[in-house]
Image (cartoon, rainbow, N blue to C red; front, side, top):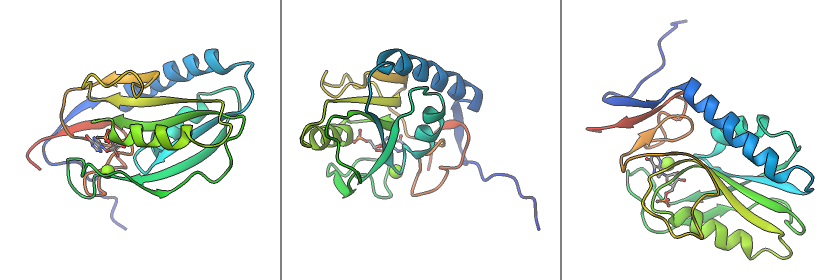
Length: 183
Ligand code: IMP
Ligand code: MG
């Protein structure tokens, strides 16, 4: 069998290496440990599909043994811009009564997706709290109610791939995060 190299993006600029991401994940995990230690009922809710890789690393940086669940939403289709319509394709599987929910997504752009998820999860019966942890934000000066409490990096307004993020379902496997141009 061919040992072909990982398929990279044609015109990419690496923004964050795998090591830089790992350091940031540890830093975010430490803050979350400080805030949630001694509180029971933490649930990490990963946003599929883009947040799956980040969630799996963040989970291992957290020491308070959280429950894990997922919500699957769609807004971009195959394009590089949001359709403006956020559809919940699959909801969390377990009730959130008495739970402290931490929504985990890789990136916040317009904030539409996270806003929709926050409204949806906050309306669940008896939920104790809902916060957001995002690795990246395009820094558009989001309204305070959707600004992630835990944020890794602010980036420019450009399209990025890797570490779970895709362009038309490609490049999620890249261990680094790259900005792409000319695609
Ligand atoms: P928003 O609703 O505009 O904030 O977009 C959030 C969602 O769009 C994220 O959960 C990602 O799935 C996707 N997204 C936003 N920006 C990018 C990007 O630069 N690359 C890949 N996916 C992105
Ligand atoms: Mg996508």
